[in-house]
Length: 361
Ligand SMILES: Nc1ncnc2c1ncn2[C@@H]1O[C@H](COP(=O)(O)OP(=O)(O)OP(=O)(O)O)[C@@H](O)[C@H]1O
Ligand SMILES: [Mg+2]
Image (cartoon, rainbow, N blue to C red; front, side, top):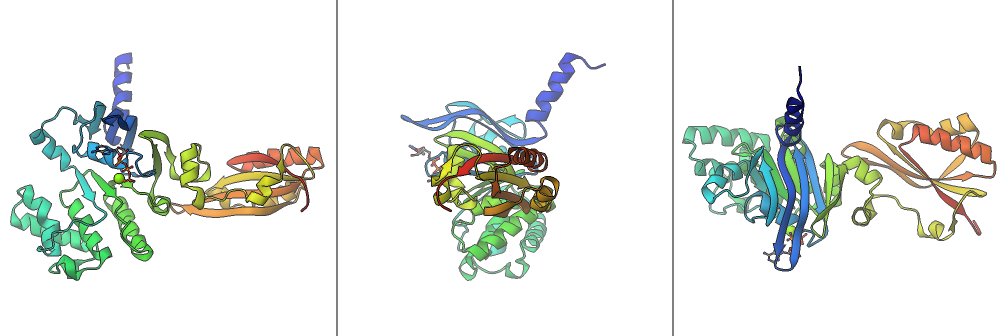
């Protein structure tokens, strides 16, 4: 028999315990009159890649610094693998801090140490014996594809190779969470892609949880499972990446993603009048399998209404199709148009009648 007590214990466990690697509850951090974090609640689930985006000054770095104990929140709670870090002293914080591996924008490698010795550093600090260190370093260099660069010094490595070493070092102590703070911002686009591929590979192979803090939306689009948006110290939106890219809700998210989602061209928007008309504009969102289906052909077959694609297209978010289509249809036959709307509502993820286009074509 299950008592009410058991049920509540179970539900609190599934929210804070095994499923979340990190959990922030109503975390507030002020610097004088500035509220850098304002009652932020956020969970990072085991095995996911969470992309944290926001404008400059939104509070991203403050959130990271609170996570690794460099800043102390004024109020709220932070749990790492179910253990609260609030109120812990430096000594008690150390082992929890080791559960978080950090990859930095500027690599932060020690120039007088070889790639292998840089990777070994966290293990040395943790007091691991040499044989254990050597085995782990060899394994990590293999994982990042730099087994042949073990004895190279940072100055002899390219930016991408340095960042690979940075990633291996962050993974050395087998962290529960990999924190990437603008890890690809200093790299060219091709190298960025290669590093993202590596992070994704690590995420899959090791089932490693990754918090990706970045101002590069393309990075988030490539590998984030979920996205959280910070603005003025508040999480204004969070959700599955494909949903955020397909239909962002918050104004900040819309603005940040502007270049990455199709929006109605200005000339059409300027001539848009509410309601149905001769030329009615629709916005349709289709995700995954629905974006691969021959939706418009089937719409014509089912209802006789032929529509034109006037703007938009299908993009990929973490390898999954996200289609945002702007369609123009003849809206004069109201019954036919209603049937078409019903059809689209059944077969698309989102349908919106934007209005009809007035004036000259
Ligand atoms: N040590 C500090 N002392 C005073 N104010 C601070 C301090 N650290 C951060 N702030 C303020 O807190 C707010 C959030 O800063 P934070 O560095 O977290 O932003 P961010 O999102 O990382 O920005 P960026 O993208 O530019 O790195 C800003 O208004 C900033 O000026
Ligand atoms: Mg910052």
